[in-house]
Amino acid sequence: MTRRVIRVSYRDQLVANQKALDQYAAFSGKPRVEIKMPPPVKHRAPKDPLKESPVPLESDVQRAIIDGLRMHRMIGLVERVNSGSSVESNADGSKRYVEFHRVYAVNHVKLAAVDIHCTLRPSGKRFVVEVKRPGWKNPRSPLELAQAAYIAQVIACGGYGCFATSWDEVATALKEIALCEASSSPVGVAVGEPRRSGQLSGMF
Image 1: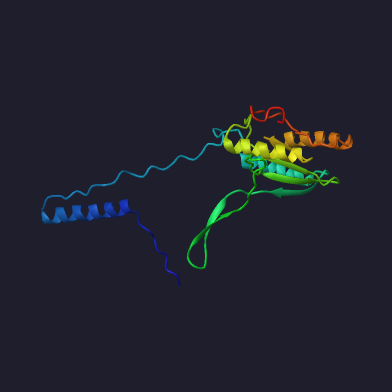
Image 2 (image 1 turned 135 degrees about the vertical axis):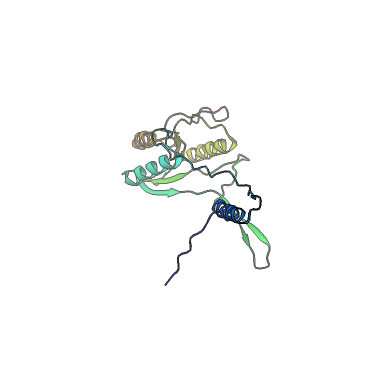
């Protein structure tokens, strides 16, 4: 039979010790010894769902977009690209740096992979999407500019790409892609709501 062990907190143990000292002082007639107690533990109030931010997280938007893409008739393949790296140990004890995903620069322009990569049917062209949280406007940080440059390169190669903050934006982009494919346009174009930056003005 397994014996249940009840863990006592540090403060509870001090309280028990203080009671024992008080009883000893009462019986012995000696001065009371007072133990310095830590402040009481402050318990966090439960979160009020009505006070939480109504703006969905990027992960929520990404999940909705992926679900929509997987059901769309124009999409033959959906891939989610994770970025990041790790440090692994070699047999001799040395360390090596391993990247999960790498995109090489083109014409000395730094590129960064976006979140979602799709293959269109029946053309087989690429459609890439970088997901952002609602409220996002334009690429500004170095990472966002590198992602914008990546999308620009995909477009220059005949594919399609956009930033998106909702599934509705991606659905609109797919409608624009369908019109481009129907017109047999030989060059890919940027789709979705325009996302402009000084460096890439005219592409997004």
